[in-house]
Image (cartoon, rainbow, N blue to C red; front, side, top):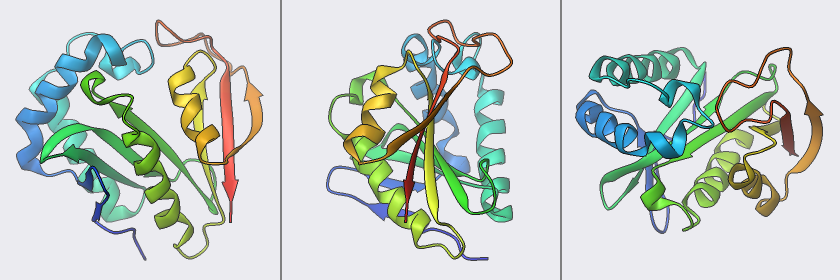
Length: 179
């Protein structure tokens, strides 16, 4: 099975696979960013422990080996600034991109440039013909990324669940970019 690059060097950051040695820094980064992340990411609400971080890193390594997901630390000058992933959740010919950033790193284009790099990696994989980004309608910061990169909004859905994050409107917005 072909996989995307394990490390991608960009102008202002490096995307790289998560390492077991990232445990303490991942925990600190998420803990500091919780007020910023928890309205959108239910896993960031509540008590984010070292064990939570260890489970995340283990899952990232397992998913990479099996090809289920390719999850990267977004690093700036060697420090963890956030996370971005390609995930096999939208069918056999597509990959979904998800991302988050520590608030100290927002507004600099890091997610946009990281997403552009992962789109390129995804569409270079055999059998992949589209990439999607899903976000809650209330998350306008996440919406700006696919808009900047030329994705097309293909659907708005009310999933059969209550909004999970405190900031969510409960409407999924789906953006797609095809080969």
